[in-house]
Image (cartoon, rainbow, N blue to C red; front, side):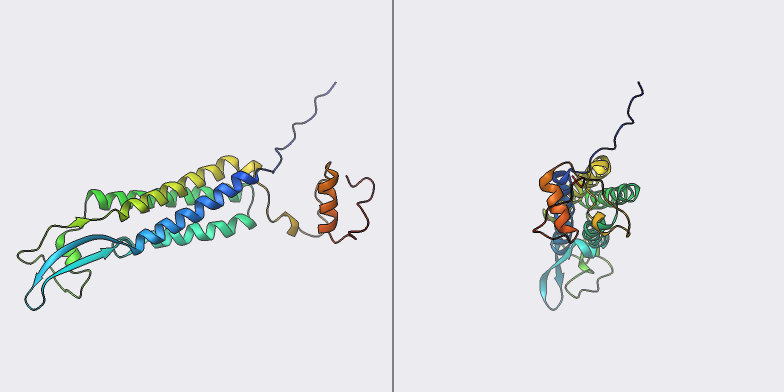
Amino acid sequence: MTGAAPEAPARDDRRALGLIVLGLLAGAAALWGAGSLTWFTVDVPTATRGTVSAAATGTQLQPTLAAVAALLAAAVAALVALSGIARRVLGVLVGLAGIAAAVLSLRLVAVPPTPAELASARAGLNTPSAPEGVGAVAGTAAPWLAVAGAVVALAAAVLLVVREPRLPKLGSRYAAPGAQAAPSSDPDRAAWEHLDAGGDPTVGPREGEN
């Protein structure tokens, strides 16, 4: 008696796919939002305007954050068209982008910009070096929002790579002409597939279709 060949895992893990999409969108929103917030401020004395506050946003200090956010948003659309190895490659790229965003954000937290860098970044101050009496650089919690977004994106990427064999092929209905999906053993699902294929809703699937 010969053993039957192992069947490929059914692509029905819609919950995992939903979590991946949600993670990518949440990561993109967090990185984009964090990039638009102020990360560091410093008080700078001027000769004509007194003491002014110079601030810099995350995108001004690290433009890569906006690029990663755009990549995550594009990855959501790519999930529809890709499957198999291509989807896993997409997951690896998203994971690397998430790691890069987290590392760059943490590096700014660990080594904040100098007062001179912030003074010349905003408020119209062309200050090549920190003037006398400049205050200390003060940070905000915005970088941690970027780190959180990067971690969420990384988790979504890992889930995509690990669960890809069970993720539904969203673009399967657009397969090349002549390609037919495997018949379903569920009568209700077969009826929906019959309707989706353009069949008459008043006539059920032909015998042998389910």
